[in-house]
Image 1 (cartoon, helix red, strand yellow):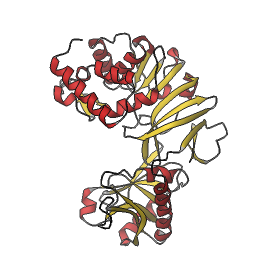
Image 2 (cartoon, rainbow, N blue to C red; image 1 turned 90 degrees about the vertical axis):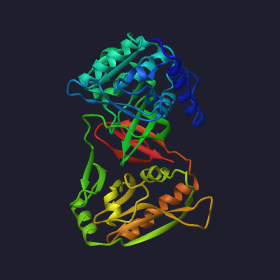
Image 3 (spheres, rainbow, N blue to C red; image 1 turned 180 degrees about the vertical axis):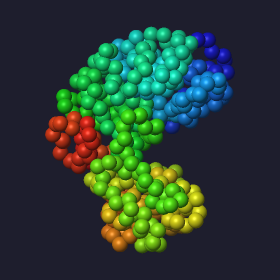
Image 4 (cartoon, rainbow, N blue to C red; image 1 turned 180 degrees about the horizontal axis):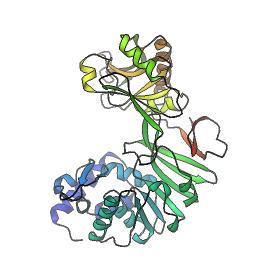
Amino acid sequence: MSQTPTADRLRNRLVDAIISERGVPCDVERAMRTVPRDAFLPGIELENAYTDQAVTIKDNPGKPLPLSCASVPSVVAMMLGQLDARPGDKVLEVGAGTGYNAALLAELVGGDKVTTVDIDSDVALHARTTLNTAGYESVTVIERNGLLGVHENAPYDRIIATVGVWDIPATWWDQLVDGGRLVLPLRWRGQTRSVALTRRGDELVSDGMELCGFVPIIGQNGEQTVPLNAADTIRLHYDQDQAVDTDALAATLAADKPAGHFLSAQRIGGEESFDGVWLRATAGDDRVCRLEVTPEAVEQDLVSRPAAPGRSPVLVEDDSLAYLTVTREGADPDRPFRLGAATYGPRGEDLANDLIAHIDAWGSARLAVPRMTVTPSAAGAAPGHVISKPESRITLAY
């Protein structure tokens, strides 16, 4: 597909910006400089197609349409780097989206080696149309529930999901070769991380994970969301295996002011990420959930301000909770913010102490990432802290 000089310039400028922030493998860089992203985003202005942001499109203004999301380009580059696909590898993509990611995969391995699947017929049709228009006719597009995979083209050397996955289905195990690689935005305890896993017999073993955010895949309902107040401005997100008494928590929030605010020894700079606290906590504590607080709730002082109101880790037990906070201090100009815990309920102080222990453990090795080992639910779990799901068991160990 021919491109205008403006499109070429914008595309290369986008890739240059991504490379300036993170390492990108040479083959992924080449693919991103080659595939015209704007061709997969109808109705989006050319300049907007080449910004490092997610884009939501509608296929056809003349009919009721599903929404299809194009992921942030830097996240696309990151996940393709994790996938490490080589020429000739057979690749399954779960979540066809706009077709852009499948085109990048075609550049990496060859179009006839790529199968992309989507449960929504209009999304699959859009991907098929844009891939054809952009010159990637050899990519296979299937309309199907992605949790089933595409058995007729299996086995695959690589599987990549571009939708949030809460549990790894057995069908994907069956369709991934031993030694093959699975990259997916895996959801557990309220967070989502892009995890790179290599199959070793009956185990999937990680060698990297990075924070990300994706729309959840259709068909998995293991995550629960409940309001903790009548106005629905405070919400708790938790997994189905967690014992959470939402009625007791709601009663505590309605009746109590914060039981206390406790500070850890850990300070951070203005641009420093503290998401590793959440990851560290999930490696050994089954009480970790996600607290969501709307701006209205913060403005009305319904709760002490969480570290990130839309998504903060929280420890929950019976009628009590403790969640992560960030407090500005002037003691250290390089790291002016201190991490801590705000609490509600009679066990709040104990939970705050436990959360601060997680913060301090993170603080001693801020860039450390646990090893994740995943086994089928019928198999024995690996040593370490186990999170059990219907089709898999996840073990985390530092």
